[in-house]
Image (cartoon, rainbow, N blue to C red; front, side):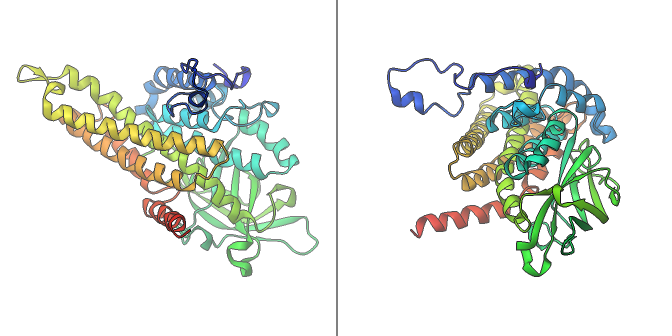
Length: 412
């Protein structure tokens, strides 16, 4: 199913029914999705289980994303979720985009992270702050055939992102910038056809000199380094991006000069919700693997899932997964409503990453010896989930953000 070629109705709500109480119709449960969102959820789940699942182990072992899988992401409309239809996108909601990330993560988080970064970071940055010319040039390609990459981190600027050393020099009167520097840990780097690059156009102004650019991958002076050999998300390429006298037109600048720090903060705030969606997808994927096993595996004459000690454990985990899901869906809805969501996004990412780690660890324990092998995907989920507490803001950064906002709330 190609999401970009269907006309959706965003007004109706699946399974919500009618209510005599007007207030109830305005405040539906977080787990009730619109018809569009349900259609997307079912479509991506079917594709992930039927087409993606059979090649997950192959891609993980080889450390490469298969070209046919990448093409399928575009063919099904999963790469242009919020891009307007006039540019070839699906014109769907942020919630729909996060549901795509969640469902793909239940099968392969390596593929999900590519979809997440592309939709929640780059696509949205171009939609929010790109000039009309930039939108005309890139949104149709981002929706149809061009992978994007988000270039922020450097050797000396991880959590302290604005300590970056990459520069964007422009002489007075010139209509171009010259970019120099090296970006590290850049996801999607090998597949990307365009890079959203943050560089400092006025180092003397500190972080207020940071500026964003959309740079074509074929631009002279831009090279991709050797892929990192990672613990998890092995099919997702993570590479250095080297910039050596890269000439970039002023027309390729995203938004205003010196506003890159603002754009970066705002887009990462919503990007954290996408990471939370990935992490709850991992946790649910673990349950998909282990729960059937607990009902089938017998010891001492009964399924091991019938022992009270096991029942209490998986009931506890299911409750935590539900809580993480609700935090994530709530952050999605707040963002869509243009309400404040920064604290809730940090909470969702923090807790979802913790739950994913616990789910993956417990799944291996409950599976016993087979969980420690590659016969099942449990060990892959165990490896894949760890980065959830690191990228797009470490868990300590999330705690710091939550604490600052709580202090502000209680000091009024």
